[in-house]
Length: 454
Image 1: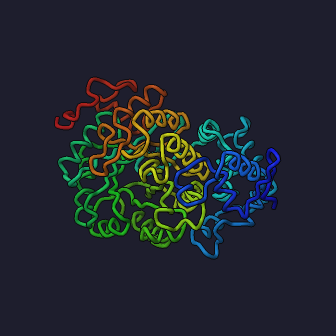
Image 2 (image 1 turned 60 degrees about the vertical axis):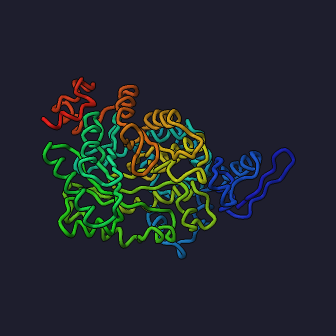
Image 3 (image 1 turned 135 degrees about the vertical axis):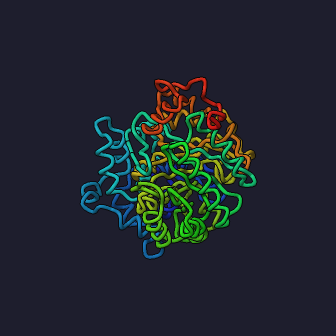
């Protein structure tokens, strides 16, 4: 395995795949904080050149984090279809990239191919792609998932309605929920981040959202994004949950810092299958984000983009209904500015789709990142063009509980109109029935939450 190259009379040599992967990554403040980033543009180019020449067999035979040392690595390795891998193991990363981008290769071929790839192979390919490459490749892949309703169909853009409240006030949450629905938001999930992670609080919010959904016969699903163990206790006590949520990471150590293991998630999956309110078959919701492993001091010297890809390999085992990366939430220590946030959002979406994951994105930033709302709107357009399954929306794009900026309810409506996207089919039919849309266009009732007082 050759790990060196010469550019303009200078030789660049990399000690192992961890260093090579990290230095081939596009500039990320998190990699620099961890001491992993390329020192110069020239070194980054050299790393990309060396990475392009590696075979997929090289990557599989030299794991960045050996399976015997890490649960996530074992899960990723166990999922590889050896028959498919045998056909492509001699491909270079450059050849894999060309195959994915080939116009003759479509959805069916890419889904089959993905079963023969590890997460590290997918990450390596993304490191060689431009932003437009990431958009074009992801848009080829259609991932349809089903809970109470199906989302992800070509030509659709679903949304998570996020009616958070700084005191978990049910009245406040319902007011925000009504406004979001009146803009046509909420087909992916009505998902609340609770302030109070207690069982009683989670039960109260699940009952409130479930009762409202039932009252208005809304084709969607509810979820309260407390820790998975809190949700499980609430469900055991009769709380009506359509899905179970949990944040996940790309290493076993980082997952343990979140208080989870694969066996715990299997237990949660079994519980929601038996006691959840939704039709299924997919009833899990995961959230990720570049930099979480570094935050937990559990990155093992691996760059944050590759670790993010490993998130999707881990998630694939559980067949989730939805997964979203929270792309700019963690802060400038990991993604410093608008350029890095946009790049990470496109990387994450592509890598998730290549794993067969129904991908969404929380297009967001904290107020100390060098980014603004225009940057988020631009990323919204790019991801919609890339075929993102869903986007998260908050009132006026400002989450008053988590104190960060996201997309707004009316941003979802504008993206659908501008990019010719529709809500999920069952939800679209409900919007027509409610008079919120007519022939797919918003009516005068749109944006008026008082229609739910009638």
